[in-house]
Structures are given as structure tokens and as C-alpha cells.
Image (cartoon, rainbow, N blue to C red):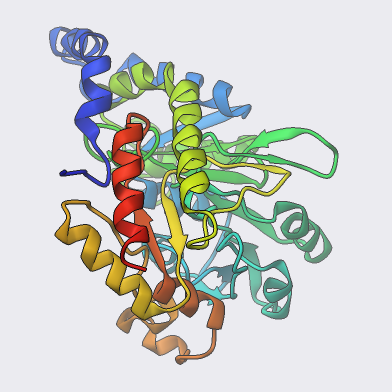
Length: 372
């Protein structure tokens, strides 16, 4: 049996007519850049998240970079984040001329450990950038407490957590991305809300940050041909906005289907491997379904068996960022972040998408269990 890590065609066929109708309208109007569909999608996305404003951009990486700059992060400022993430998180910090400072994670959720964050604070620290890894929200109450105590900004990396929710100490459920000054999302095709190409979004309740971000995405311009500062060419194509607007209508149902898939995996794999947790105050989006093994040897053995049996799987991420060549100059070494290194050595992502069938799940589980 051949099973993809993410089967994009399965979701597409269900809504193909809606997608094609939306795309034809754009082709007829030829409003390919910042058409009214972009504005419409931004409003829909902000309303879904519960934010006042949304600014669409060309990628999730650009959303992070523009959010940092729009929030006033400057040359030499330090931004604390996790080494257990895709390099886009730190690229955005570096391209904002700030310095990434790593803090280790929690082994149950794989997210930032607030206690480790507090240890990394210096006079140069200006922001915390939590990553809601794989779709499970970070420990935001503690991160918010730290940010308030030391007057720091929180910019959330929600590339993998669209539709994930966190219940604050006030008892209210909020979507990730609305717990700091800005939340940043990716519309890479394999994401929960994926475009037919690249795209990104940032959300905020801060009017000044919103105005700055809108200008930054369009060459530093609030009014065409008048430029207040250097910006970027980072705009979401109108066609992508129209496609995403269609898909947004289905996202709540798809998230429930992902959670159903995760529950079935957990029931069949629990006790054999370490399955993902969902904290009581968190609702998982399951962009990825990651299991953890007792050691690297066991993980690698199962990975090979899955691939040999036609099941796609992926290690997110095989080398934590503090050990990457790009960040040698930061002076970190192996052993500095043992949790991050353990995550890289022992975790494996299994196929995860809403339409994954019970038969496929049972087949995947059989291969995993028979090779432990």
C-alpha cells in the first residue's frame, strides 16, 4: 500500500468546483495583485481568529520577518525562540537584523520551556517567539507572564498551528496567533490551510503594527509611489487569496477530521511508542502527527520499514538549529539543548491529513508495531 505523508489531491477533489469557480472569476477580472479578494480574505481570516487586523504576505517566513520589523525589533535586539523548529523562524529574526537566542523545550509538547526562556533573558532581549510546534500550543500563560514582567513582545509562529486553541488563565479559549502582539501563519500547500503555492498572513490587534506591516509588504509605501522606509515586495496573489477563502469555509471540519485521525493513531499506538499529548488547556491542530521512540536506533529502524512498505514519513527536524552550520557563529555546541537534541533523534512524523482512512491507519500502525 502506498500512502503519502500529505495527500493534497484527496482534499482538492471534494471542493474542486468551488476552487475552479473562484479562480475563473480572477482570470476574468485579471486583478492578479491585491485584488478585492485579498482584502476579503484578510477580513475573513481576522474574523475567524478573533483579531482586529490581518495582513497577507508572500510566505509564512515573510509574515514573521514583517511582524518583527513592524513591532519595532531593531539591529542587535535579542529574540528568544526554540531550536526545535524550521529554519524560517530564525531566518526571520536574522533578516530583521536581530539575534536569535535559543531556549530548550519541554519533552511532552516539544514546545518552549518557559523556565528556560527566563534563564536566557538579557538587557538586549526584546521579544519572545514561541513556535506552536506540530500544532500544539505553547505554554502561553507562563510566556505571557514573563513578557509582562520584563516588558517583552510576543510574536507567535503559528505556521503549524492554524485552528489550534489555548485556554488562558482567564478561562477563555483563544486561537493561537491572538495571544501575543502578532501571530504569523503559513499557507504552504501542506499546511492545515494550504494555498496552491506559497503564502502567509499575520494577525494583530495593534493598529500601528498593522499599518507598518501593510507598508512593509509593499515597498514601505502607505500611498503608491510614496515610500516612508525600505520595505519588501511580499504580497499574497489574488488567485491564492480566492482559493484560501474557499478552503477557510471547510477548515473547522478538517481540523475535527485531523483530530479524529490522531485519536485513532493514539488508540492503536499507545503503549508501543510515545504518542502526542493534548494538554487540558489546549486544542491541537495536528498539522503533523509525531511519535517518539525510546532511542534513535528504534526510530531509524521504523522509518526504514515504513519507507520500504510504501508509507511516507518524515523527521521534523533531523538537526536542531543550534547545531546548524548557519548558526555556528552563535557559539552553541552539542549538549547545550538536550531536549531539542532528543526530539531530533527520537521523533518521526507519520502520514496526517483529514481524509486518511481507517484502513490506511491500521496498515501504518501494523508496520510500526512489527518493527519495534
